[in-house]
Length: 113
Length: 150
Image 1: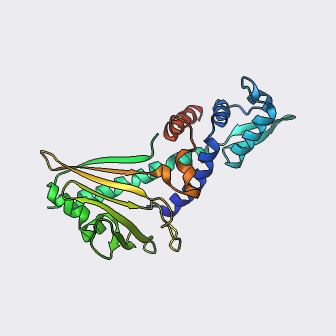
Image 2 (image 1 turned 30 degrees about the horizontal axis):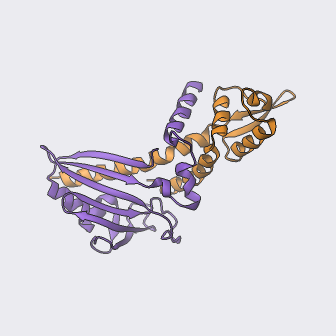
Image 3 (image 1 turned 60 degrees about the vertical axis):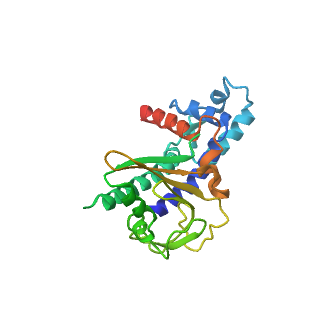
């Protein structure tokens, strides 16, 4: 059981969850999940937000490592970096796996002849 | 919102046998991979050491909550208390509850670990700064998107 790895994942996850703990940021993420790197202008479209507000939220997502900046031609764009999202999701999965392992050992113990 | 882990396992052993494996501190230690200093007593802390290979430097500490013979055993603890010198006592622990039910083939054991949303300070965000719907759902949605996009 990789407890140390779990602890590291947990710390990373805390940042990621905090970054995602906001409807606006989830909305931005949802747009980025569609694949193509997008500009601030594209990300602002269809929202009631100002570009400044979008920029601010993107910085939070960048800080959590879930979004990264990319230059496409002369334009700045943002794209998704999926890895931290997958790691964050894996925390409870990991804890859950620990229980599966422990219960398998318990089962072997109580069912032994 | 999901702040808990729930597991059910069917055991081909009588309730009395399962109860002993859960609540006898030496038996508990065998499958939980800890060496405990003494018996479990409701309301009292339980101390010991992790015996899982590679993690023997870690202390185990829990506080026994309820022991209703052959029905319910519960304790609170600090999951992933992985730093040997850190004092976790100021943090809100999670609650682990084992519930036993007699079945025609033996025992149905249910384990619920809850309270991940109350994990403190640096861990707190783990659980819920996410908005309604719960983070698990959100993460599943995201993962599905990722799977499709990959």
